[in-house]
Length: 261
Image 1 (cartoon, rainbow, N blue to C red):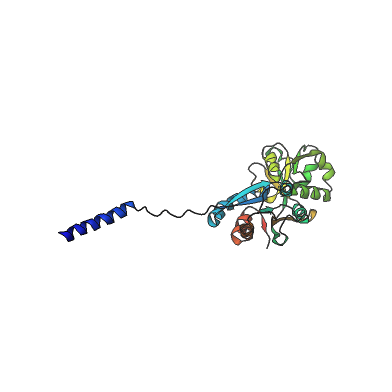
Image 2 (tube, rainbow, N blue to C red):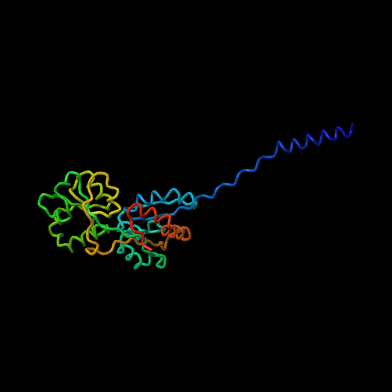
């Protein structure tokens, strides 16, 4: 009888311990690291496509800041948070390098591009080739502001070399970035605009007339670099390396960029 009572007490004790013990809580996933990426406006669509998979595979959150390269340059100079800068022109990256604001050895040219003329639907019958933008009946032509938008700077250089700038200048509608030029053409606010071929590929309404001669302007290159004041150097370098990977190259090519090796 005593053995039976002892056995019952043992079972009761074990059941009590089981009831009181709590299941182990699953370990919390590490919070994703935030990476601040300052990128030229013309990179918006391609980076937005690459973003979800990269974030998922690397436990990071990409905070993407798009704008004219000159505007982004000024933001970085004024201390805005940035880990990586991807410019649409050499000039802006050179300026940051001269001021010691980038990690010099991290700098690399990632992509190339070409310059094209796009024409509004309403003007497609009067602008059949690039030279037609000098016609009197063509009223408005948009380019990015040359001082801050690399595409605008290339456009000005090309038009000057083609002896067309003086005819075009009075017709100019300057835009804050290359995407605004695209919008002006799509909405018919201007007759034509000069953008990168990668932007022209996104044109929903209008026509691509042709490319400006490659030798009429400096080569269009997109340099990228780590920012000296960036807080996440290791993760920033991983992202920069990813942009040079075959996976990224495939996506950039799809959007009309020339991948530089």
